[in-house]
Amino acid sequence: MRRIQTTWWGVLLVCVCRWSWPVLAVDPPELSGFYKNLVSATTVADSLENLGITQDDVTLEDAQRIRLKLDADLGESVEVRIHYELLHTWGDRERIRNELEAASGIALPLFIPARVRYLDLESEIDQGSNWRLVHGLDRLQVRWVAERVEVTVGRQPVSWGAGLIWTPSDLFSGFSPTEIDRDEKIGVDVFRLTASPTLDTTLDLVVEPLDESGPYHMSWEDSSLALRVGGHIGEYDVTALGGQIAGDEVLGGDFSGYLLDAGFRGEWVYTHVKEEGERDYVRALLSLDYGFAAKWNPYLAVEYFYNGLGTEDPDQYLQRLAAASVQRAYQRGNTFNLGRQYLGTVFRLMPSALVVLQSVTLFNLDDGSLQEYVSASRSLSENIDLMVGATVGVGEVGTEFGGFSADQAGVELKNSDLLFAFLKVYF
Image (cartoon, rainbow, N blue to C red):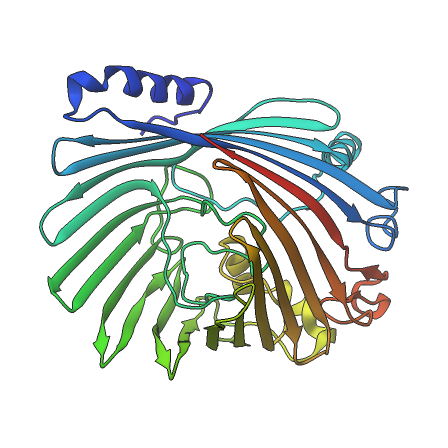
């Protein structure tokens, strides 16, 4: 297959489809989108500064994202979805990365490496000393719908699992427990078949062709095939899943329902890793959540998470992170923590219909550290939202949320705290 590079043809594709649709479709397409601007400040006095990478105590960053969405029907049974994104990033981290690349030819891994996908639908437009402009397609899918069967091919989101904070059975891509922007999950390039053989049974088959060496290639070892079967037991929704994820064999399931008046959920996944010298692991959770009938509509969720991929010994965090199976899970967005046992809480208040106050706390039960994510959001108008917040780690050096000690990493690296303001404009 010819390698396709996304330049401005992404915008051209959206525009051509928008204005030529009366010839192709019964109904005109729906064109929508958003503009988002995330401004953040990160404390690096005891991390990047200790590495000699910068003399700044705080780094400043700004990310502006424009997403154009085109969703249309081709007759009664075929739907097309195309989402184009333009992303401009500016700030100290772009400057630091560019300086390191120029000096050594090696990019500093300031961020988790981008997830490899089958299609190559992103490219860089231009860059400067402290900014970068990239664009691409994060949705490019065709969906065929019949009475009890749906087939979707192309770049699309896949969301599995029942957890509120962690989702170990979200095998194709997931959100971090403290993700700031949860509007759009990253698209993955898959073939997806969903069916309802009976009114109480659902089947969800997902096939992801992939080759870690590059796009437009496929190897069975890197590809994924998983089946999720759903049904009901009493008043509970239950699922079972199994298959191969990037060469690892997985088996798991989840449930959701009510325990008295509280929401009650659970999920588990056993992973048999493909590396002979590395250990298999189980990840599982149980959660309860309840909305109180009181002023400001208090909501509380409590979730216990067992992360068999991690370790109980903080001194082994970096060694565990170096394992190929763990790095693969991080890169795919399937895991975000290095410890073994966690307790998480979500507490939310709504002083009015336009204001939401929320706190998410992640407590590492093994090393005693915690991470606190707090936010306040307000709807400024029907299509404009503003959120401000912070993520703060609390703990001794040598713990997950406190930072790495000199014994662990060779140099003391405290965890960075983050302050942010996030503006969202929908159209």
